[in-house]
Image (cartoon, rainbow, N blue to C red; front, side, top):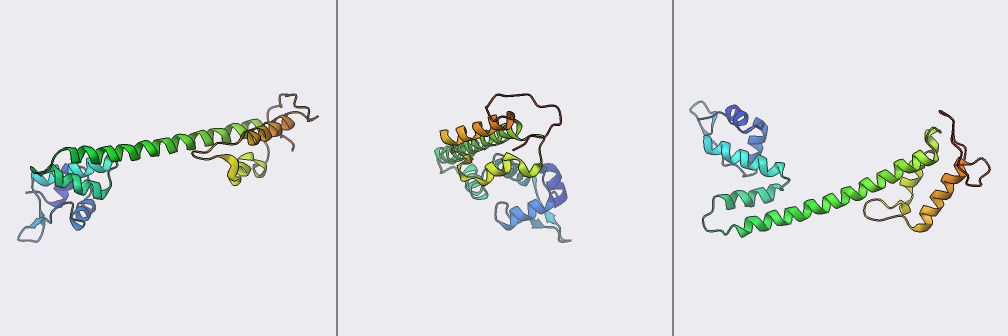
Length: 178
């Protein structure tokens, strides 16, 4: 017999997590000792570990509920488990693609700041302007060629006091002018 604290330690979760899993039906309500303490067994450790690992893999509570039911069913085909995992895999791939698009956008923001305004007043930072423009192409969309040309023109104009586009190195700590 394990107390809730013993179960929590054995499964690597907190006691409130166990209570929550009981409350939402992922874990059967524990029996009680004569003194009213929850009484758990080793099967509960395995079930909590399964739930925790499934959540670590990013499965939703509802997916975990279905998977937990399938894990004890002799009547269900394992293709149901595979199909749930496949759906989740596709969701993860979509999130990864969105994160890669976000990374590219942030990379452009950082490069634009380095090229155009780094060292100047924060209020003049091109990142603020780029974030405020719907054409900046965050997460899955790209800047149009005309946007890229406009930004390149700004970069060149800021580098050259004559506006001719000839690039001159700036002195360390020098402020760029608009």
